[in-house]
Amino acid sequence: MPPTDELGAAAIDLDELVEVAGLLADAARRQTLAGFRRPMLVEDKGGTEASTIDGSGFDPVTAADRAAEAAMREVLRDRRPDDGVRGEELDDTTGTSGLTWVLDPIDGTRSYIAGMPTWGTLIAISDGTRPFLGIIAQPHVGERFVGIDHPERRQAWLQRQGGRSPLRTRVRSLDEAVLFTTFPEVGTPAERAAFERVRDRVRMTRYGADCYAYALLAAGHVDLVVEAGLKPHDVHALVPIVEAAGGVATAWDGSPGHEGGRLLAAGSADLHRAAMDLLAGVPDRG
Image 1 (tube, rainbow, N blue to C red):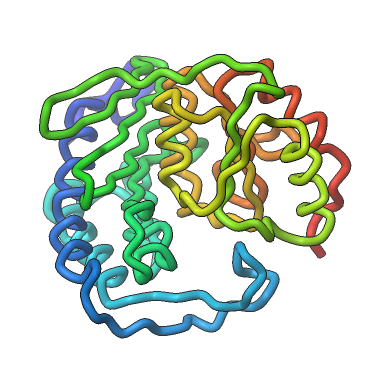
Image 2: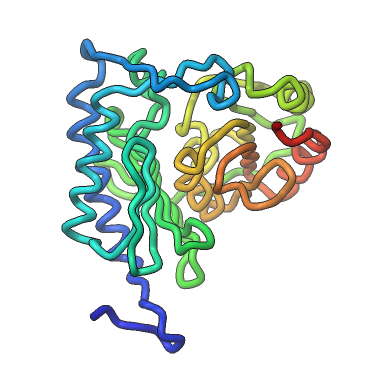
């Protein structure tokens, strides 16, 4: 029986969870690198224009997506059988521990099939209220961005072959900021117009970095990421990494953003407020 705290809830061993998350990243790496920059069959899951982030209706999946998620779930069945699992490609499972793993085997499948190394494997753990541990793993370049945002520990670091280094966002004003988003289209016409209000105020805007944009924000290389049309598995891992590194990641209206939809991530609270003011007033999607 696992140890419990004074309230009777199962105690959380953060070091063990980081270790298991690393094993998941290892398992996914073997599957994703086996197919990367090689001929592959790409299927369309049949998304609708409203359900895809770029509004194209094209929702790709590869054998590597499914194999990587299956490999991660196999590790969890062995190491954390009492935890729930919420993934992109396979059915959700419930657990008894109160913890749920949220998995995106290849975030940025379009980049993956195009040979761009901006995709990543996203691994998060939620306590049922919010995610408190996240990993962005980019196996082709050998980087893992890790964040813990928990009452017991707040820490973010970059792990690569040369060792571990701390992650810290930088502080810049809106007119000095570098802004990223995955797609120029961003979302609905109203969402696009709001994004363009931010775009027109910053120093530079770049496109197409997928989850790697949030990693660069946590590492202090860029300052803002603005996106819309996201799913929970797109977001859960990103929030604790950004916030543990000193940034802010919420929905456009400042509410919790880990369940997807519109996400605004910024390197500082002041920059977040300035961008949020420009994004205000967008109606909810129908």
